[in-house]
Length: 222
Ligand SMILES: O=C(CO)[C@H](O)[C@H](O)COP(=O)(O)O
Image (cartoon, rainbow, N blue to C red; front, top):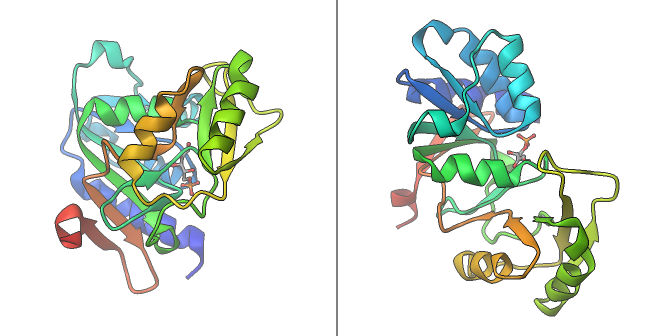
């Protein structure tokens, strides 16, 4: 089974968590499979809150209404992918550059179901370059601060986020304490969002694999 088929398997398994109402929807190739699957049961939901222009477009193409988060109140469910997850369901996200809106929708949701292929589960976060969304005028300042923290930031040249900002991808970080590093990087002036989701980890991780979809929760790590 190839990686894309594993992503689709995880995405389809996430439908079991949909209980109606308005669903928070993330961004990326795994989420694209989820949106396509959600279209099959769209009569059972009111619509979605989207974390990116790309997902909004796909949802609308399927005829799924997209709402402003300011109009919905707290969401019951958020479904999104990840670039890496550890066993505590702390994540690196932002490979697609949508990390800020993803973090907002995750924070505004009671339950966060993360969907991925099994290669995304790691012992220690950081092999995937950590995305950091930065206000354009602060790019060099933030890059110097990230070097001080032991990383090697690389500007994702030519990429502009949906919020009009830039992304620095930080290489060579071994993230032993995700909560502490999330707080430290968020505190650098000019940082909008760091792609560590540790203060608000996922609640459920569904991993597609050749053996079938596997579901993990934080309790499994204890
Ligand atoms: O954080 C993200 C986008 O900002 C994605 O969820 C992450 O990059 C995983 O993407 P994919 O499902 O394509 O592997």
